[in-house]
Image 1 (cartoon, one colour):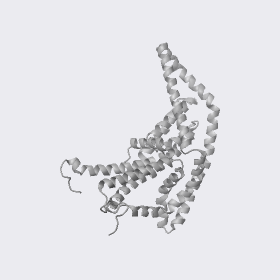
Image 2 (cartoon, helix red, strand yellow):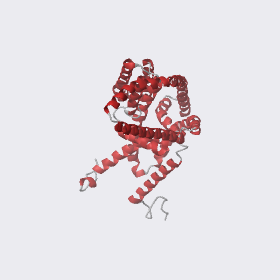
Image 3 (tube, helix red, strand yellow):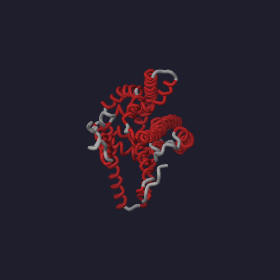
Image 4 (tube, helix red, strand yellow):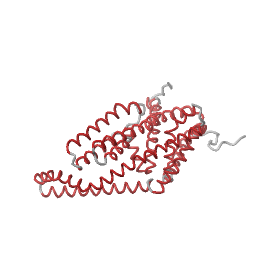
Length: 370
């Protein structure tokens, strides 16, 4: 008589409670390892994201007769060549606009002071001395809190992934990780599929297909939207004559990965800069026109075509996942937040469907499976 397998119970099978404890233990160990290794995971997570992003292109080249290794080599070299070329084009522009901004800081301060002085005089006439003192104390308190928050954010970023060592590992290790993951992607997927518990393999494959569709729709689609908007806003604000226009525009476009937040922050920053540089109503109006056109392009052109309505990720859920991932795991958590949000969303919808078909919901015997 053969002994029971390692993961079987005494009678050769696991009870539902044992299965639940096993999977919860696996999930807990995974989260613990992720937290412990968060300082070295950045190039690997970035490489995995790049490999996932480029896998459909590798499949197309492979279908046209190229070997997987050759297709992977060509795609990896081309992808990072484009990244390096983009940096060579962008960095000089950013450097020049940054130097111009630093030179003009005194004039910005004077312009903002001249515009704020009439408002402050009006407040002094309408408020008592006690009210003014309390207002100054509140402003100082909030300013100190904001400065402390920004300093803490910079410290966490430097600690979590943008320190020199992590940056060097991102530059040199990520291409290697991307190459090997992209080359062996289909083999890795087949291997993981072979590990699935056989009675539930079909259900898990179906749910993983939904997760993949969600990620493909959001990550690949939204990334294309972000880069397109970054190019549009950067060029348009530069043409308008806004100081730091290219940098603000590029950050606005890339910030569109977080729905609505990137556009609002970019608009407010652009209006403050336009006011500080003394451009007057013509420049402010031009900035507003740029953001109206960009919002129309995003809402009626790019997003419906590249992302569509099949994603199933609510904007509030995406914002929460990004903030939670960044707070728990730093920059690695930000990279993992959207995939995790997609997984949780699909699993939650699956559990809700099962609940709505269960006796727990109906109060009587559960209806038959459709």
